[in-house]
Length: 243
Ligand code: GLN
Image (tube, rainbow, N blue to C red):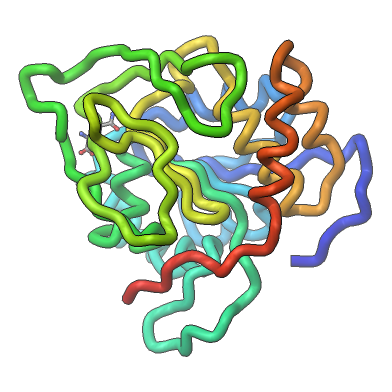
């Protein structure tokens, strides 16, 4: 990606996969943070994006939609994962992705294989379909996030490149692999937009746009997160290119 010259007024263009699920809630949060948002339904919608959100919903339905529209390989390429049959030579780094709930499932080895982990669906049991919990997320300042868990997955297993950012009852519910972040819960349904701010700071930094500090500093206490973002922005080894 060609980095645009830093311009304080430049707004990043963030795609939200809109085949099914709670994409409108993500759209509202991102637009509230002054990002431009494009709903993604077909491969052409991926052109020129600076970041991508895969929302919560139903992973089986989303999988069918991705197959129907031929989105799997374009999504993997956008994330920086080499396509099947291609050499694993390091390509250009992908753009930041954020997956929530079913989005976490879509990122795992058994779905888009963008993140080196395996999700367990409906992991908290069917009886306990929905609950809220305060989740302490590594790298997020200002206290725990209120996580809304709706038939949520957890991360059952992961490779060494995946950093676990939060756990509930000893089970990983948030993780990061370079520029890919996955959370098992929803924050887009509540008033706390800090997770989206961190994501947007990543998006701005990776697109070479100014404004990452502003997006973090709008909320009191967010300034301290800057160092963390700057550190994570250092060139990484590329995400897993599992086949
Ligand atoms: N249980 C759903 C699935 O397996 C995920 C639920 C959600 O996204 N809130 O796809």
